[in-house]
Image 1: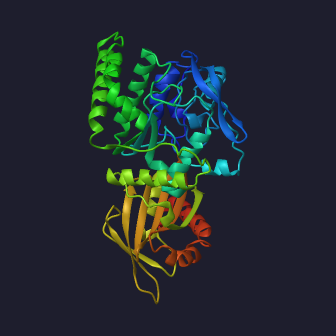
Image 2: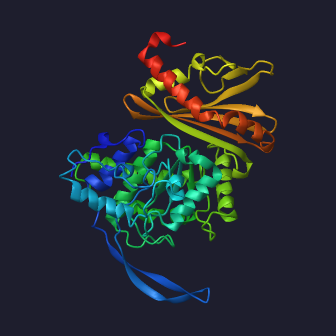
Image 3: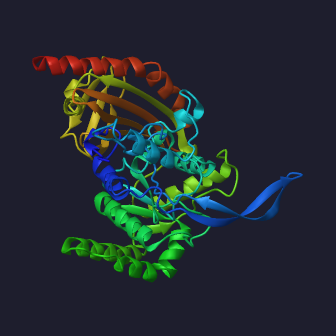
Length: 450
């Protein structure tokens, strides 16, 4: 089966990251080869109480798994594609069925479908992200109740998916199995060698600024890392290139152990109960926020400090490069009677001013710039911050998705909530459509710009 990463949608997937999974697990086919039996404790409910029934033996596929983008409905969201779709249909179906593992249908418009919109999974993160390192993928279906919990935990830190765009969910073992402990039942030497090779390549590509490490992984790095290094060292090398790869895998494991002392930190994974995302979920989200702040990864705001969150997306008939140039040129910001000025180039730290008749000047700064991808403007208020984030997602060579998110947060944010909602809420959709139309007209007639 031939896999073509260039056929995947670049607006949704980090192609270089997708190539790692495709090469390690699909092109070098790892499905249907690693099944094993395992034992688990079985319980039932009797008069509302959990009662132990006995130990049962069940079968695990041991197949590889990774997080999809969005909700995992389509092949592309799992980074699957082919240059001969008809010829590879049976194999692609086999892989997708295994990855989904009994996936729950996401009916369009449902709470679940909307909640997972924009989820970047394991094939959309970019360099400088945070890696959340867990033990291994679970046996169950996707999305399992625990998967939903994880999403709720992340969303509790920053609603609207903002935090998720910077997080890469990874596992020490890439093959499904029991996750109740860190014994890694069913893992063979070959599976470990594949897993570490993949994880090492993920770290090399993404160069994470911080890593949240789950307790099960922490225990394993303390007690089982020497044996894992020996397992990796025992891999067969048919040539000098493969021998060099094995050496890099071993060095990565040693470095992983050393980095624990520097930019890794332990964090809880699941709330012990309350799957609907109540106080326990919020507390875990807050602990992740605190850990990442301590590690210096990113400034995050707690959920209870956000008073207003507005968002709207529109598609513009312009190239992604033009959309970025047009919107980052303040001369193109036309919203009468407001006038805008930027002191310096459009880069992080530059300051700007908005002038409105009969009002004091409003001062803002460029807080974040990811060239070609997104930027954030922040306006400081009295114990509150009003942030305007713009995202640019390329849909095709001549079509770009524009998203503006407006977030009011801070201890005193509620004092400004009514004003922000009144000024921006009703006008956001029309304003975004107007900007998209102005972009399209400017690209067709460059002389009309400004």
